[in-house]
Length: 143
Image 1 (cartoon, rainbow, N blue to C red):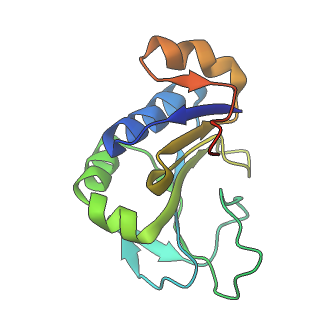
Image 2 (cartoon, rainbow, N blue to C red):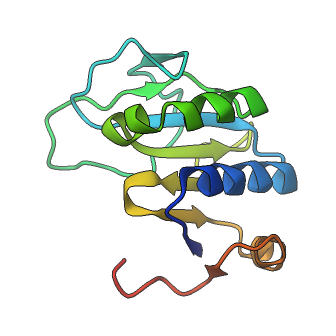
């Protein structure tokens, strides 16, 4: 696992874009906080059906249903929409994640309110560092 501490939303989304470009993981989902009942988020439809995709965070003790956006492609326009809706993102989203089309587990994610990005493919570490991300395979002490 690669850990990237990054407080700025724009940089977190840039990391997701870079990981997407490097791996072909283009399926995007925004995971909402349990119990939050929105019909849309950042112009994406919200559903309780994750299509079998695994969430970043599980809430084992919560009786509230977890909702997510329907899978979409991570595009430049979507990133711009997410940046503009930063306040809504902070209030509504637990995490943002990208997936490869043929896999159920996320490849990279950002947990905006924690200022943390995670990438599961350790081979990407040199490319992330080369692009100016403070990436390491060691979790921060507070994590």
